[in-house]
Length: 370
Image (cartoon, rainbow, N blue to C red; front, top):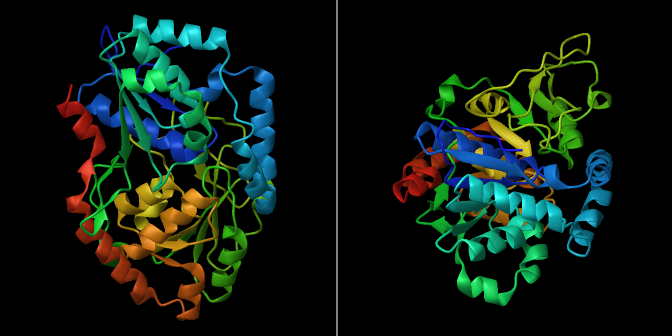
């Protein structure tokens, strides 16, 4: 099935995402929106949409299990490279035919699971550009798992480029996918709250770490993963939620999102320009989260610092180290040890503000080459 994000007879760019992580999928949706705004049509393909339904069911079950047990999630990540899921021959053939019919000239790969199919298409259609777009500082598990499955002969034939969004450059990062056209809110306009979440799968120590800060008097916004995560709001605590029944392979919209009311009900809504949770990031003093690539993208776009929690894998550990080194974030233990100083968060906010003008828009770079 083809999902077009701009009106035109042909499609020049295919953006290849995965529902395994919203930190990969949402940046892909953002890229498609930014390209469409510039008049460049794009299609979004989600890897899991082309898997058998039983495999998708197992992924959905793993998402719940990983949310409930972060230690189990880390063990599962270590096994990911040995248990990489590939697309069947029929699925690949269908995709290659669809891309050819849409006259795809450029493939932007945000999940390494796509790399064999992307290279096969590029070999069959000389002149096709393949961008491996990395949202993390180092190669994520999907890229590490699939690199060995791309024949060396394909690599030599294909116009392949690795694009590192978080490449460090002159006190900032090289490039980003803009989340919003709005300027960051000034510090004086912030709502005085901390936002705590665990990424798209609700993973990590954010709930217990948030409890520690709530005990110190901080008002909190928490993004719950399932209804069981929601307790009676108290002490200025608010809960929000992505629709637990939604999966990225269902459609190409941003995640349905809403606030949990006093009766535990949620009215889910979906923004068109970006994911709705970004509104919370934009108004917060800081985000309390594991350091996924999508979370860092939000942090830069909103000039909202990160209080860095236990990472999910080596790639997120490198993300955290970069954000701390640039003065955009602080490790949770260090912030608590320093007395949870809000003035320190303000300094990090100003560091982000100063860095933003030096960051290249990746969508703009793609547009300029079309």
